[in-house]
Length: 263
Image (cartoon, rainbow, N blue to C red; front, side, top):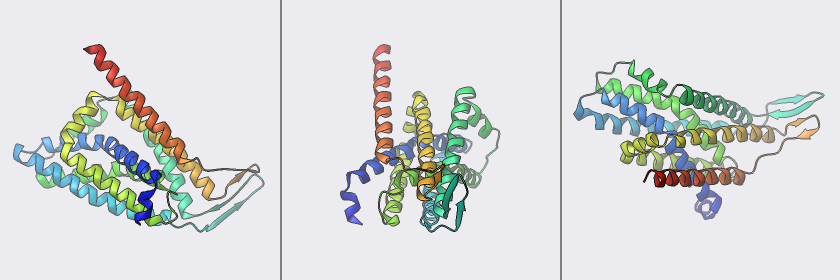
């Protein structure tokens, strides 16, 4: 287990995944804040902390379940037609469906944030919350919905990082724990930062499009898919890491430039 952390790819994946987990969890933080603000003042912080702690446990359990299914590599269905050949396994099904979901989720979220920026907040405000238990239940439901893209992102970025699937699971769990702890400590500051820099949310959603496409190609590659006598290869994760790092660098430079212009 220790040797996996001697690889630079592991640390790059862990840092990048932790950052993405935080950014992708901003919507969750905003919703949690709205839900908690409906409670009396003395219960708001408690509801936020309990909700995030329960969300962390919920995500770890979901990670274990998804990772188990992804580990099922043996094909159980074979396609052999005149134009496509493939061996379908549970791993490829999870990755392919996850990729499609991320593409749908990211594009629909980008559309809503650009065309209807107050949609999520208005939707949540329409629901009444009067008790601490009610707030925590709604926080868990909201987190369950938002955990799907977060977990699929984690699976996509760590899949194939080691021959032992438990290594990828450990990396994902560490990233989730670190991100949730950071959100618990800096929830309000993180929310304020993203709200003042909405382009970071759009950037994270754009990363989901890349990751979704990578999951689809990875599923085709693991299924040894051949389309019109052309095999489909996997996209090297180094390309994805470079694209994410480069995009973040440009965005931070733009933030610095905008700040200087205001000054």
